[in-house]
Structure formats: structure tokens, C-alpha cells
Length: 89
Image (cartoon, rainbow, N blue to C red; front, side):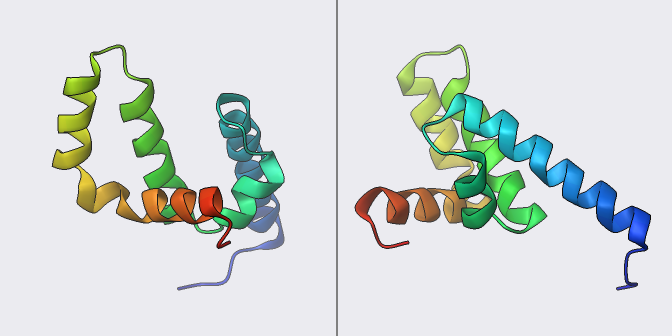
């Protein structure tokens, strides 16, 4: 993978900050905690997918089925949040 230019790196950092600020407004986590817990773009995509399911305008039974159907896509985010919840990370 090619190294990002200085401009590309600055844009990437700004995107991470915007993502963290947006997610922190929806959760009890701060933007800093989100960036620490989900440092890679793939981690953040898992979190975003998990939050889409949780925040969907549907019944819990439907949400539970979506969680089961998408477990491979969101399992990392679930583990990370679970670890944070019990104080492991």
C-alpha cells in the first residue's frame, strides 16, 4: 500500500475526527474513546453498521434478527464495546 501524501494524511485525520464526533453524539463514549477503541477504518465501519441496526426504526425482534444475520460484519465492534463496558479495555 502506498504511503499517503501529507494532504491525504491530513484529510484522513479530519475524516476520523468527524466520524468520532458524530458517533460520540449518539453514544455515551467521547470522540477520543471512539478513536482509541476503533482506530482503523474497518473497525469504524463495523461500529457504524452496528449502530445502524441498533438505531433502526423497527421492533427489537427485527433488530435482533439483523444482528444475527450480520454477526460476521459487526462482531469486532460488539466485542470492543463489551470489553469497554466491563472495563477490560
